[in-house]
View (cartoon, rainbow, N blue to C red):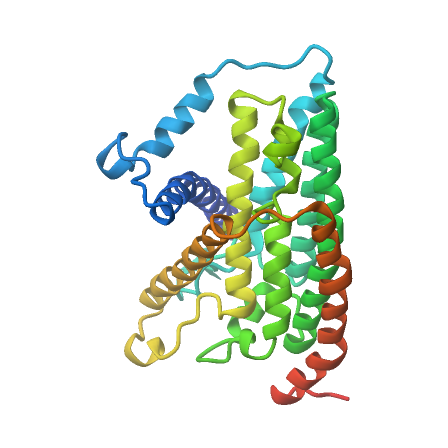
Length: 351
C-alpha cells in the first residue's frame, strides 16, 4: 500500500513539475513569438541578434530581468507590493493542474493507471473559474500597494473588467456543462472523439468564451488596465526587475492556459479524427494526442497575437458596453434557447 501511494505521489510531482516548466517555457518563447509576429505584420525582422534567428532572445530577456536593480518605493506597502505579482503568477500556474494534456498511455505505475493530468477532479470547471477569479486580487493588491494613482486606476480597471466579463464567460461555461453533462475536463475531452467537437454544438458559446478570454487575460483590444497612453504603465508602473517580469510572464501563461482550455472545451482537446485507425499503440496515441493539443494551443496563441496587432484598443465605455449590453444578453440567449437545441441535436435531451 505504501509503495502504491509513494509511486502515485512521485508521478504527480513529476507531472506537476513538467506542467510548471512547460508553462514557463511557452510563456518565455511566446514573448519571442509575439515580437516575430508583430515584426512580420509590420514588415520588420524582429529579434535576430541573440542566437540563431534570435532564438536565445527570451533567455537574454530573462537574464536582464533578474539582473536589473530591485526597486521598492518608500511610500508603498512593501509586504503587499511583493505579494501582488507573486499571487498573480501563482494563480496563473495553478490553472494548468486540471487540464488533460494527452490520452491515457496505458502504463501502470504502482498498480495504478498513469494519467497525463496533474489531477482529474470531478469539478474541474469550478476549480478553473475559482482560480481565475482569484487572479484579479494579485493585480488589485499590486496596484493599491504601489501607492501610485496610475497603478490604482489600472488596478480598478482590471478588477471591473474581469468581474464584468466573468459573468458572460460563466454563462457560456454553464451552457457547455448542460451539453456535456459533466464538470470534469477529462470527460469533456473524452466525449469529443472523431469530429464530435463541442464547437459544432456551441459556436455562440465559444465566441463568447473567446472574447471573454481576451478580456480576462488583459490582451488587446482589452488591455485598458495597462494603457500606456493614459496610465503610464497601469498597475505595474512602479514595478521593476523580476517583479515586473512576473506580471508580464503571468499574462503569457494565462494566454497559454486559456488556449489549452478553449482547445479542450470546444475543439476536442487531445483528440484528432481518424488517428485511431492508423495508430493502435496507446503510448504513441498519447504522444500524438499531446502534439495535436499543443498544435491547437499554438494556433490560438497566434490568433491572440494577431488580434493584438490588428485591432485598436477599446475606449473604456465601449469595453463596458460590450460586456454588459451585448455579451451577457447574448450568453443568456445562448443558454436559454440555443443550448436546449444543441442538447436535442446531440441526443441528450432529458426533459
